Length: 96
Image 1: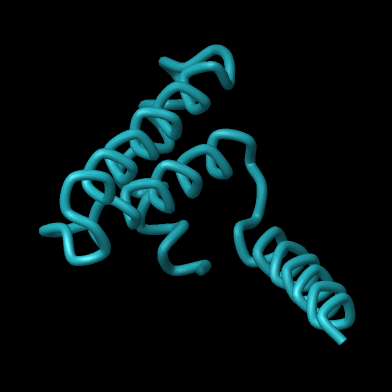
Image 2 (image 1 turned 180 degrees about the vertical axis):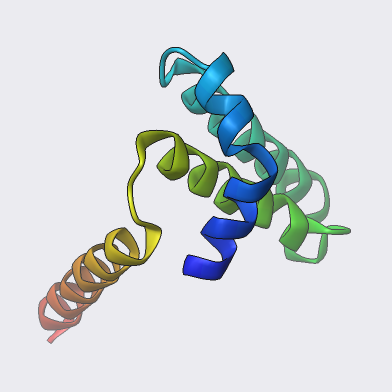
């Protein structure tokens, strides 16, 4: 994720650091992008045209948010992946 986060930073970090004063911007942007994913899925299902790009837009917004916060996406992703693993393991145990 480091390369992806750096690519996003190269495009927008300086501008966003100077322009965005609160995280409300990113909350709104991520919500809007999720709305586009939802709209695509509701109207066309999993085979909606470019739904993968709509989903990637959400990821890109999250990387921009992490840049604005000066947080490392790699470290955050590793923690998140571990949480995901623990949740799935707990769900598997419930089914037994």
